[in-house]
Length: 501
Image (cartoon, rainbow, N blue to C red; front, side, top):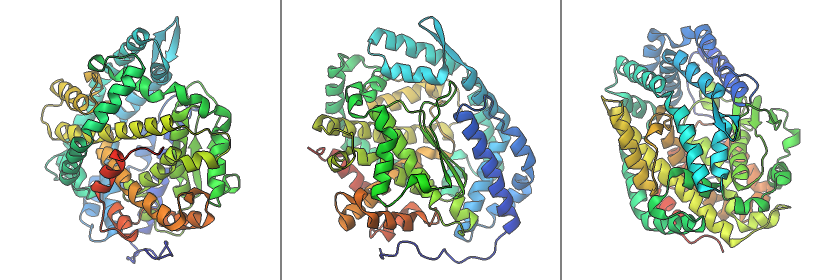
């Protein structure tokens, strides 16, 4: 890769400026709705008025025209956007109903009504196993009540995908993303096989530490293991935002002087307990949302979302809409993973004030990463079956529990077989993002050393990449970094390597 990371955008014709301007307005309003709901500022997720206002962007004729204009990269990105929004609009009412029910739902626990979203947090933090399993069952009962709506929504998406001329939803997603899901699934099958022994050893050790027999473990037990409260004192709530600020400062980035970045840290009852990033207008209005709690999981989530936020606020404002706001989301996920995985580094812990390093945390952090990779690899395999199936009912719930349980070695609740599925095979974006992260991290270390996060030159290098938005696909970015393409073997080798001592 040349030292000048940011180069001129791919030449293209003028496209359809009016369509792109309106499409950007649509995305902005949509993302703001998700922000207001997730930030606990608005109980209802009001999507239908937005889809109604912009329905002319996703009429059948417009979508078919865009699907026929995929000769250029920008054209492919626009077609992907329009077709997926066409499907999303068709299921908008059901999406609203599910989100509204989830926001309003409560779980009765310890004599009080706990908001559904907060109850999930309590499961991970509950040390008493009997209480943990009981609370999990109550949450699943709430979740299961939405399955009929989720099933109806999925059937709606499948039917519309076929109506556009695709064989099934799998082909619809594969053709429009260009991910080659068959090849990716084959690579993930290898990953599951190659990391199985390592995972089983680490899982047995982690469960034993919590007093859980490995043969009896439930996914609620795994949630508790992953919360890892024993490390929380090393990641204090008071240092959460300062640690991010200091990390960015080392890269020459002053978060306080980024007028296009809004940090939402206010505590609200209905606010999502996990951090998220809302790119309401790229790069002009990006919101990083967190309800600070402290602990290693809170740090990891915030740093991940901060990686997204820095990508979006540093995107070239003059870049065409398809490159600023659309494209291959595997790329932004790779930037997010680079940031949250820096917490594994002893060098980072020694660099940032108020954070203590210990080898036990390094081992746990590798275990957590392995969990997520195996979980998403299994999700990809399951979702390919789900979306290719003509029978989406209870038969697939058992298959979900079998596939996920086989990969994770714990009992999986069949009731989550529809809620644990994101539209458009987004699990593939995560998997490809993890693959690309290894390439990017190696490039950073090779160029700027193990403490690349303390180098303003590394910050300039990243800003050059971020400026491109998502013009490049994950494969193209890997090539720009000096690789032949995405290499799953590098990820596998990284996962089974001994953790930093």
